[in-house]
Image 1 (spheres, rainbow over the protein chains, first blue to last red):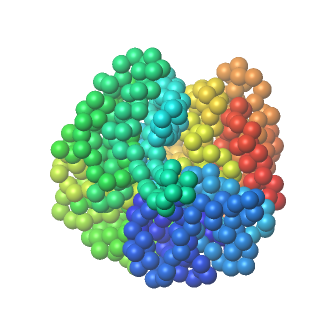
Image 2: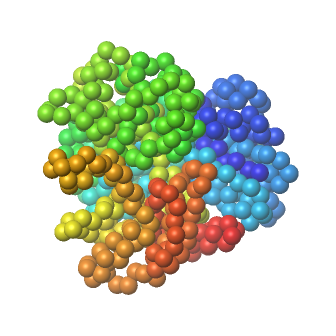
Image 3: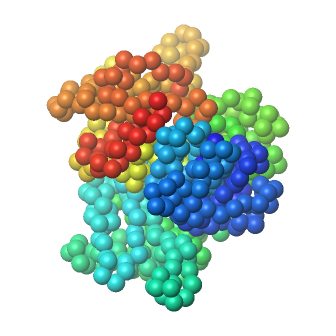
Length: 270
Length: 270
């Protein structure tokens, strides 16, 4: 039996149902590669038990074999804790389908995720188009597709929630070459994302976008959550705190009532 | 102090953080008009306290005055329980902004919502465009805008999550005329939604869509949750259980790998 258990945006977001299942399970793993890791000690203290870590190979398998999580779930009650909600990343969808194919019992406990950001700050959730991921540009690998998707949303009067790239447990090139054993985490900041949006806009010949007012989101759903409203140029110069960061790019053709709501939200927060 | 507390998809989805806040609050209200109501006795038993009900006028106010929830939150710790996640409906966003304007402390506890359905059944959450609401047609009021939005998603290779209308505590015409005092709840079913989609397609001159394969979703996140996959024509003839119902209309231009995932999901569920 396998339970994909969404933890939400901070450790105390775990649901009563989820807590009961995790307490009784034979093994509890924390998924450590698709998202930022919450305070593990706090999670252990809430669950009242030790948790193990699951990395890419434990979840995706290697050499075509089934991953550890699946083989263990054939015999035991296994819980995989996922920060946010489990079926947002395709990795977990693959796990769900594989478990079904092997006739392993499977259950999914949804929870809050970064998609909850859509309703914050006065925006109407129905006014959002496709969610966009902004990946770290690397040397010559500078994909500008995300800008095309933002533009399609613009054309249809829709806002865009932009998720910023994270790298978890990434090897350095020297590590890949066997010369050292250093791995690092890296989280894209709002200014880094803006620099990439500006580069993509310039290279794609998209008219001046620096004057569009966007929302910078930090640590959604946590006690230190913060929203910052300003133009791309303004936010590029601001200081932001610890991860995760995300961005909302409102439609330039958004309706007046909604825009007023957003303005009121930020004015009343001052 | 006002807390907008998302309950998620069933009563035991409440978070540990939410439970602690609701136990200590001066008043706990359950919002009874934007969504289906979960088992109230179960909620009371989980919270270990009585809950009060909040209807439209308690939340939106009347005659331009501030609503009960706001005036009470000026003096006391008030919790408003919302099924799903609080900021999905604009009503709650207005409450949030109004509280901020009056310098009332406010906190929002997100939770899972019907948007979690996007990742179910093998779809990629990033492949969804704008979410669409299908309202009950009434006599001459038959708005077909939702079809236009589905078509825009199609053109951009995006899936559509369709939320089906609900009417909570609605008066009959005789009740409005003061001739009786009958109020009712009504939840759009999958076959009702399909009939409206077909009517909108026919009237809008959209080519034959009856052969598109869609997903019917019942009671997402509850123990009786069910997904049904088939053409519009097939699902229109099927029997479905109790509410809520929703629909996913996959992009006709979706990518082959994702379509294979969806097919595998349903095949392995058999």
